[in-house]
Amino acid sequence: MVVASLCALGQPQAATPEEFDDYLIVEAAGAAAETVAVCVRFQRQWPRSAMLPAVLERRFLALQQLGRPAEAVVVAREALRLAPDNLTVRAALAVQLASEVPGEALAEAAKVAEGLESLRMARSVPLARVRETRARLGAQAHTAAGVAHYQMGDTAGALRELEAAEALLPEPALLLRLGRLYAAAGRRHEARARFEKVAGSGFEPLAEMARSELRALLK
Image (cartoon, rainbow, N blue to C red; front, top):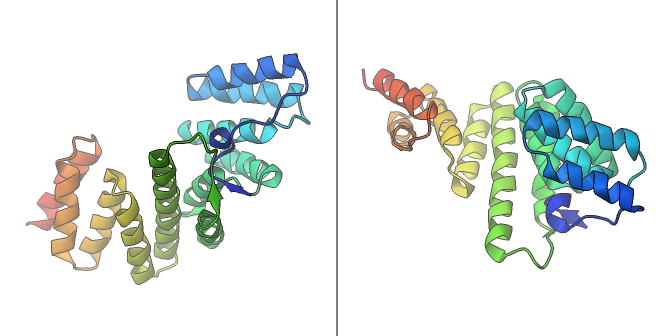
């Protein structure tokens, strides 16, 4: 069964009360550095836990927040070895790999797209959240594929994928990236429209970066 995230689907049962208590500490962790520390501690204490895939997911996402990509990739690979249908980890890994290993990123993005066709979440999850999750994961997969195509010199493919991501979830960072690609391709009208959206979004420093791109475009 393909799942968006083990955290969204619900957790397997702990084997002992002590294991469950330790998992609650993982769930309660706040800052990314704290999350990494308690996840490592849980892995050492409970190396065969049924809850380990969810712990690895949390550790992977925290490592990404901390800007530790090499470690994040290792942890993601281990998380997917234990739970290959976890689309949250796979989509985030695709984005992580896109700039450095575009071929692998494309493969991961394709697996996410395939998995979304049979995505299931817990029945208790509201429909609005299911739709948001599908959009977020789909946008991540298309963004990863777009960056990968760009790295491989395929501008048309990059535009196609980033436009697909925009249709699902037009976030400021994506719009800025797409605007820059339009500008490089000489499509000034489309570039200006994206830069203006980001400039007025209030998301700093992306808004200031978009204003700078607008000034350059309109010279």
